[in-house]
Image (tube, rainbow over all chains, first blue to last red; front, top):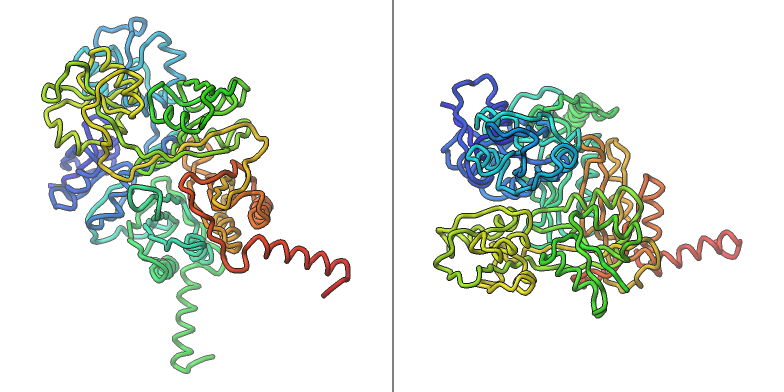
Length: 306
Length: 306
């Protein structure tokens, strides 16, 4: 059976993403792990076939635990992604009416993302921080607090009535999740793909600029760039670079080889983009341009042309 | 009197940074605000002369609320920075012995950063999430929990005994804090300075590469780069770029003008680096090189030389 590890507990946005990424496979077993590192260790150790973890949130920024784990230990590659709108559901304890709500619990990040809504709609409720949105729903189920701000999936999971859905101060807030597996067969290119690498650029002036110029000179569009310190402090950095295209394409393979010549690079996956955006390809930087230029060099080497 | 707004509550690492940045001014009044946005609004509105806020943590990454606030609304500039090692103090309720600790409270980020220590030293304690490290100390003072993981300053503030100090799973974990003021007199250059800008690079292939190349070609060393989505979702990005040097230097002024020609740029400050690292200057990219090259162009224009 296909087992997917995910960053738990049950009833969070990550479970929702894992369900979505399991796709039509209704027999897939979703297994919650307490930390991102443990979910990723499960797939490394072969306990599960894949792991679903968050990688970036448009309000909170990069998920540093995921990035750091991807750069260290045994390699994992992303084979799919999901982009979830972060719209919260406000759950009340059974029998608690909206006007009776004196406490509302959630993870501090979630409370921060619905603060304005709470001020307007539950102005007298005290805010209580919990370790996850699902922990808040559980505490409400157990009668500890009156209401919870949680993922939509928690309503069903904890059997609690919703007093509001689609709640978010920032309308466009989204989290992107990755489905990670051990290196193996890659997904087919679709024309709407994303490739991710982590590069340990040398610690000298211009090193990052050179890596980005290798991509820009090949007409490759960046989609994300995050710098993370390599050790605990702020010393040397590694760069997580996402760009349009698939490693199976000649233009992308050429770019990856150029990055690899310049520094230590780890491939983190090529897979379809959840937003379906097609790669923009610059004039004279298409795959056919790379192929015909390589063919020409070969024919020059053979003495067939000049 | 000199008043400094800071991201509160009292008894947090940010209060510790604000105290440090107040320097010898023992009459400075430190005023806690509930959110980063409110602390920054206080200095914009003239309620305080300055605001102290965190900008990046080596484990958790950039503080997105600070970055977003710096890019929007009325400009503020950083005039100083502080770099605090994030070593926690574990506080116990008065009369509670270490072996009796059944609950330990803190902000989820702090609990994540001492998880290993707690597993070894307080293996049977239940972890409880609170809205800040100081809120955990307060709850312990009030007898709600047995122990708190907090900033060293909280021990004194809440009058609680420490059962351990200098606790951190990642030894080098640091947070950098900025002292922000309204635009005005800049600090003097010291040779060990940092300049910060936020640039809204055009949303096209190569735009970021060009900005970084402008810096690299002038031999200017990057110290940080963060990309943040401009609106809620993952669409267009703005880039927070920190580099060595001071805007008063000819080589840095030349680079800022080049960035400004390419896109909308906001200056976020030039000030001494807390780590005291001297700017590395490349051959032929020193201030005297920029000055003598400009002098030569002037003399060519006058017809004095060729």
